Length: 559
Image 1 (cartoon, helix red, strand yellow):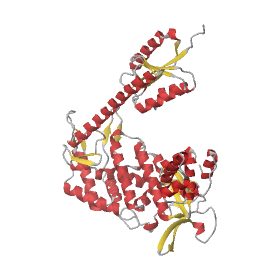
Image 2 (cartoon, helix red, strand yellow):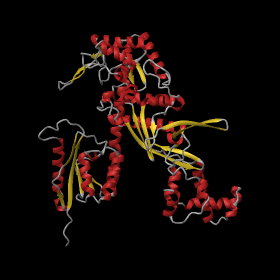
Image 3 (cartoon, rainbow, N blue to C red):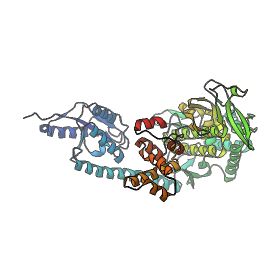
């Protein structure tokens, strides 16, 4: 009789909150003890408990980025674990999508999973079905709870309640903790009033900052729970900009893109508020090519706003130029050494509008991704996340609507390389646009690197910049689908001439296009989802006879 196979068991425990983790015997210990007892009860089946512990304390089950879980998966991949034991299935994950990934991961490593309190394991199809059902309800409960919290916050703000976050200058929390509203701090309120008066008089942030510093106006002093003091410093340009745009000072509460009447008293009257907002709108619409009290004129043609901003990989500046063709004025940016008629093959000659659009899109995408992953500020705070997201959305709208006027102020410099573009943003300008101090920004936010290339498509040179989004070619996609239909007809015995008469096209038309159905699955999938190379056109595909070898097909068409 052959000896029973030894099953190496690892216990995984998790707790969502930090409460009680500092105790001598906490929830993680209780889970581990119950799982260890279960493993001991299965010793006759060959189960053996490994000494290592895999614990995650204070981490949500809605993500797989957990240190203990990642160490567990590494050991599973190394083939050192045969069975994962948990107290309940939601300790492993609360996401059905993540659960499916984990089950696939375990099956690939020939590892099983068991819940000691629910008597389910993934070694059988019935166990997997039951676990999927339970995980569906766990995920549903988690999503409903999150929706309920979001709805409660939205409903509370609609009633004008203060729902927490960083206290604005000029206000304190109500002394009654049950009263979710703000009370006016008279000393700070005079500072707020003075800042609004200054901007109403000058209409220039730079001059307001200078006068505020001269008058000794300072930011809010905040004493943290650990006794450290934050704030009480000279007001930065970004702080003043955000303050002047904050509707809380007119007695309102903002929630995302909506503003509701608040239950707290206003510090700024409606007339002064409207005058300040109108002057700020005028300042934001002022052309950067025109003199302004806040920024000297650059003397730059607004039609070529990238002038002086970009260099090629040799360090040569990209200079604007233009030509007239059939009555149309066509703008370009070219390497300066080509202006005198040189023929240096390393020089760049790019369509002006296409390059400007590509740069704007790269900047917008960079800011939106940084906002989504909370990388705008060097020290992100939960209370400012909503304001940051709104500021980024507003800035993205300005970049799209005003073309290069706003982007020119944000962009400090850039370099074009073969296959890459590197952009450096102006920290002061970006901080001002987002309503923060330059010191508050994440230093990594000011550096952008993105793919950049030129693709030939006939006589057209197309700029491919940033992370290219799939864009299906409707004609190529439709022809691929029709080709499969024709091939099915041919396999069923229909003659090619009959198909041509039905489609009212020559037989050669069917013959050259039906071969699309014999392209490799990789090429066909790319055509359907739009991720094929831009130069892969229908004309190119039907102009040649393709080899039967799929790898050779993919090499020819550029995969």
